[in-house]
Image 1 (tube, rainbow, N blue to C red):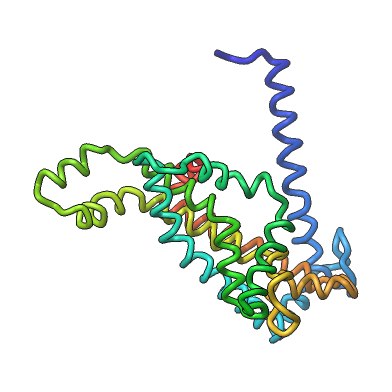
Image 2: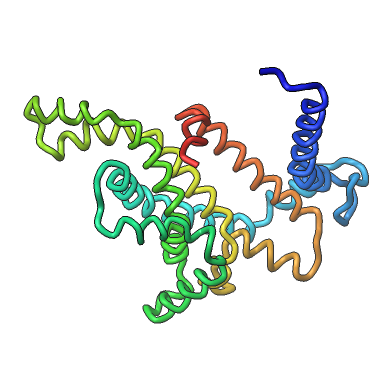
Length: 266
């Protein structure tokens, strides 16, 4: 059914406004990163790559970026087995305490991140693990695990039970059925969830701020410490690198499993 002209005008006006609002911060940061001046300015005061050259030689930033990669890797490695098994169980079986688990899956949207961060800080403090990097990755996995579970659940819900029954009738033991039938079927959800967990952990700021000290800060915390004194265009250049990393992840996700599968998991 075709919409009337007035409704189409209103619809596309709203769409264009939303796209502009979402893209303006990225456009401003991108333009400011190429400025030839010494302060962040948009439109840029001339065009130059000097700020990218500066961050290319900034060893402290690269060390902080390496720490962020480490945290994101730990988060992903923790989330993949836990989120995969939980997602398959919730999608395929009647699980005890399913209601409390479903409530837990809503926690990222109901509990302020500062509350979760302080709780994790107190927990790791009691364990005398504050100041190390791997607890940050574990904390990111705990907070963002629902996204991994949802992605796997979306794939597991589309798995035909007859496939597993056929494998069992052919004499395959349960473990073999899991690795050769169930796991390949939910692989798209595992890939999409793992990429999302990696990006979320890579950009995590508040948890990193609470769990590490000044000696081993991650890149988001390093940027925060820098803007407390002065905001210079090299910070815009670093932000562009983060944006580029997210774009690469989205492209990889589209090539590996397709964005439509990822969007269904939401």
